[in-house]
Length: 333
Image (cartoon, rainbow, N blue to C red; front, side, top):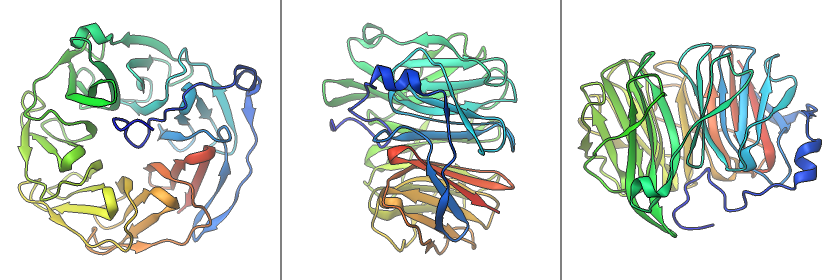
């Protein structure tokens, strides 16, 4: 795997065409994976699932290598393949409301206006737009109907040349690059309301906006470990996770971050809090961590998988984790 790729981008992107065309609907094959978690392969053997998103308790999507996108209308009991015009790895799926969603794959943005029933290519960014550097889009978030952001990187060969932050003020019809004070790979972003947002990336970088994304300032994370995911829960408390079991906690909106001890050294790739107390993190080697005290202490959950877990999603009733070899895990609340 080339050095510039982050956790959810895989070098082996091409799929066997005959196998892809034969995949229409995949059977559920759940087996117990530990307390509360069950699951099995829903994607393609040997291919990673990198993204999971549910618009409500019934409608959800999982996606990953080779442009694979699977859709459920029954809360994950069955999954059906959706056709997307790409073989690039899907890095993120996000809905700003029940009908309008965004999907990132390589240098492309796909959109839906019918609740995810169909997806259309909206934008493809060419290298010449960025002086010959290849763009890779990792994470997308919106704060309302019109304003949204995408973060990623620009690379020349196997070397990251610059960070990438894109902004839209018209619902994604057009995107414009923003200047930020770092040149590192930026991997994930999250907003708390319309004004405050955070971006995390390689080298322990954390960027913050307090003016609705008009400008971004660097915050001191206290670490040089790559940070892969950040989550805020509507107040001053936020969490970021990353390399070698790194867990960071802020209780003042990111003015200060402190490192929290983790029971594992595995790289953590996604974190999600259900409320101010209950939170989850997943990572390499099938690691799942849980906290019930707002992230002050974490307990490793017993699982029967060693597959890397790349993405995590929770709502009030269920949790989902997806990862290597097409693995999908569900947590029953």
